[in-house]
Length: 127
Image (cartoon, rainbow, N blue to C red; front, side, top):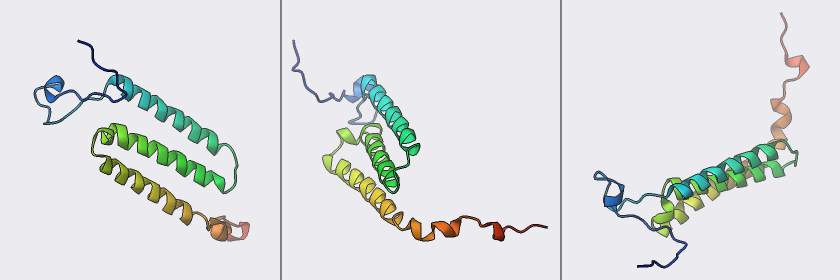
């Protein structure tokens, strides 16, 4: 008996996982977990590469965008939201987006107090 090919990952029944699996539990195939892991490694490398390039104020937005994508991948695959109700996935991704947006907006005015954070030679106390 041939099964139709689908892009969806079939969720095995709880009996396939083990005797102590909760009702409705599913296992993610190792192939998907490894591909998500290597995707996160690639994005970590991209984060490092972007940190080495001075793009001015664009650096924070690029770093936040990469962090948003990585957090979304972790939530969708490692927290199994990909196979949960679509509403839950949308809510968590929207929350990640707004956190990144709020951090980015709060970082826009760092140029106004940036000089105050640098120590000046006259402020160093010598014995």
